Each structure stands twice: as structure tokens, then as C-alpha cells.
Length: 213
Image (cartoon, helix red, strand yellow):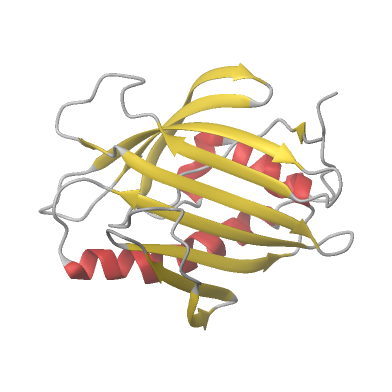
């Protein structure tokens, strides 16, 4: 039986992808700066997965994800993030705005997040899905209406964690191919590099995982 842990999750990048649950196997694309990038096709587009090793505990990553106001420090093109409502220690909603290059309109998204821990494997899974109508749309922003995001955190000893990130989203509106390529290549690598930089700070050292009873 799963236990739920208290934490948060960020929407890292926006790119033109579709179904998050396609059955086709992941295809390895390349490894760059310690980040392995995979893609796979679905009925309407493509998905992206990235895998990297972090020199920190699972609890440190959970703490990072829970600090929603700091998402702009590490999330690619994230200009602003804020907690909208914490339903419980296991469920909450947050808002993020993304800075898209001119002449494209900036995007925003509302995400509904839950986090679970499997007792048998100790694997932590953080999932977040778009809730586009949770708050009214804002002027001059394109609301992302389809987004499915997950992080799977697997402990690799006392102070190391493998993180696997999967994303499927439709950021709204037609986007040029160069923008999609940038988001599926530069975005994941820069995001993970920024995460690792923050996780090296003293406040994230030896953070223990707190599990709700």
C-alpha cells in the first residue's frame, strides 16, 4: 500500500507533445552534460523523457520540488511560480508562467500535483496534470490546457538519486519547429544543470524524506 509524501512538482518545459501514455518504446537520442534524453511517438505527436543522477537524497529532491516559488531558479523558461492551494499534505495546485521568445505569446499553466511513495520499492513518484480551468485565464497569455508530467526518484545509496522525468504537453498555438527543438534539447539539459546547482547548497545536504502517517 502506498504512502503519500508532502512535496511539490514543477512544470519544467513547454513543447509541442501529445499523449503521455503511448505504448511505443522510448528511443535514446543522446546524452549531454550527464542528461540522457529519450523520445517516443504517440498518436498525435512525441513525448520526452530525461534521466540523470543527482548527488543528493530523495528527500532533497522532494524539498526542491516543494519550494514552488523557486521554480524560476531552475525550470527552463519559468518566469514565475506560486502555490495556489494546498488541499492536503499530499495534494496541491500551483501556477507557472513561461517566457516564450518574441514574437510568440508567453504561456501559463495550472498544475494539480500528487506525490506517492511505494513501500515495497521505496520509489517516489511525483505526478502533475494540467487543471486549466482552476483559475481564470490571464490577458496576453496562452493557457496550457494539456500537460502530463512525472518524476520518478530511485535511491542509489545514501546520498545519490536517479531521477527520471517524463513530459507530454500541448503548449497551445502553432509553434515553429526551432522552438520545439530548443525545448526538447536545450531545455531539459539546462533544467537539470540548474537543479544540481541548487541541490549543492547547504540547505539541501542530507535532507531526510518525511513520510506522512
